[in-house]
Image (cartoon, rainbow, N blue to C red; front, side):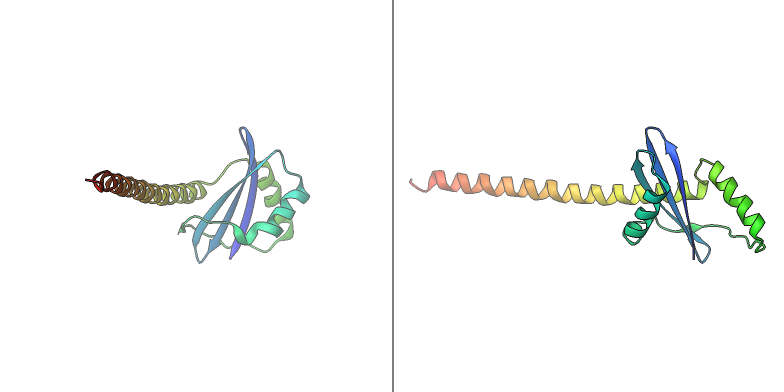
Length: 135
């Protein structure tokens, strides 16, 4: 499993995207930091909250094997620091997560609405019965 974190500015907040690649499947999670986080704040967040992150459903992703060259890894890390965007696969994964949350919210709100309507109906019926008890 390979995990990476990209922190960038998305007006008006600083945002972090956690990407997790496991068996050729990519999942992503978006975290909003607010003000620009310092390195130690990001590290502290990772240590405290990594296992609480809610990742999106996995999507297929290509993974390439690279030579284990420390200079190349250092160059790539520098390039990653300069880039301030989110990969399209990550965007797709996050979009899937948002859609999933939206569906769950719809179901919950519908259930609440129906329960409230049922409660109101039973109250009306009870009130109607109370009115006719004396006659």
